[in-house]
Length: 623
Image (cartoon, rainbow, N blue to C red; front, side, top):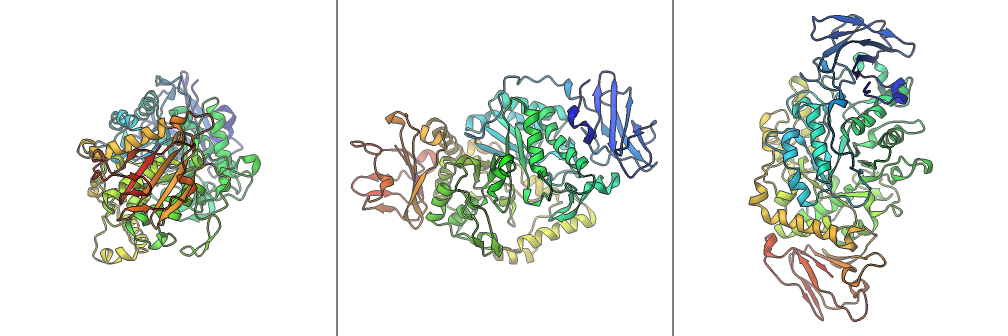
């Protein structure tokens, strides 16, 4: 029998078990006295489930994959299975039985992902292509492999209501949304990525469930925690019967890795996963995922707004076993450097050369200092954190959309500054992440969209306006009613990528591809060792990458010079040790410049004589 949940987790995991001899249905409804499974349709046959002392109900029936079903609690309305594997008619319709063993995988030799050496690409499947399907997205994977991407970070796909959305309001955690295709289409996407040498990790939302079509409370309030997140009810990870809830989500992590061959997870907003028990539920989830992966290496990253470096520690040392954390500090400082605007949560940053050097050499900028914006200390010491354990980015889904018109960073700064910051991102010691379309200089925005209706749609739109109101520069525009309605179909249509821009904006594509080739083929960049840096001007600096011991002299240290100023930076006195050659009798030479015509530059030369002159808004690599 092909099972949906490992046997050792079965006691606390609901869900159907599809096998050759039939299907076992299992559901947790501890407040109900009777539960029936109804087959096919609302007027279809009903079959009672047997109650267990734990509050689970179970029954085995001679039905096969493809059968549709729902549960009725105490003769109530039919409800979708909370552990449904597919919802062909959306989250409020009947569930469909899926047999994961029916798919023929071709990735038996795929080893998984190691924490070091990755280049991440954040993808929203619904807008990544015009069709918005896994099948259409899979057709673009060869181009991403050619670019140098090694990991697709897929935004959430758990079933959510409506015709479109970001996926962070999912309500059925085991069901890949019908909006992007059938479950096997997702499997084909992952299988194709593996064939091209790329891993795929899934963004999962274990801090809250969406506000619409949410059936958790209809099964039992025991799923719901005592606190509330910024977005709605949290889950009961530490109260009465929390073992069942923890098992549900640990089983969910295992499910995505085992049944869909995902290579890891991105945990959304971990600061909003409330749990006062030991071990923390995140620790439990990560441990379950690693155990299920067996010999295959998986990669788990987390979003944590307070930037708590303790999450990266091993569980036996008090950590949660996370491999990497998003680094918002780098993003915020880089955006201020690019735009000059430091308002709202950007007000803690100045975008100076020293900030960017500190990001490269020390990781997080806030490691316990008081944030003026948040009016409290932020961050934890991170001196022990290796560079590859921090994910840096210039754009992500949240930050691009946190504006009135969803404009991307290249539309907010000069081409030269954008090229220079791209070089910094892709050659920095951290793990770099691109947001879909960044490599194309996409003309399409990325806006916030969620297909709600009625009062909920109004509440979401109002909440969006209130959030953006923290930026003084956009308040006047908000009063004019210029915010794109989240529930308008035009909002999502405007956000779709046009992959023909790979050809039309070929200079940007080549810039990204050439930088990632440098990162992959030069030992000093590839090994992601800690770096040193020095300030050369108000917005000019040098990052020195040291090659590992034993590297040949021709593939030794590399200098990354970045000048974000509008004027050339002239280094008249070379009294900076980081500018010294790697060995006596050698000199530096330029091997890469963002100023070449190949990337849309003006071919302004870099001079390296008694005085070094770096052109304005430029980044160069010296060997």
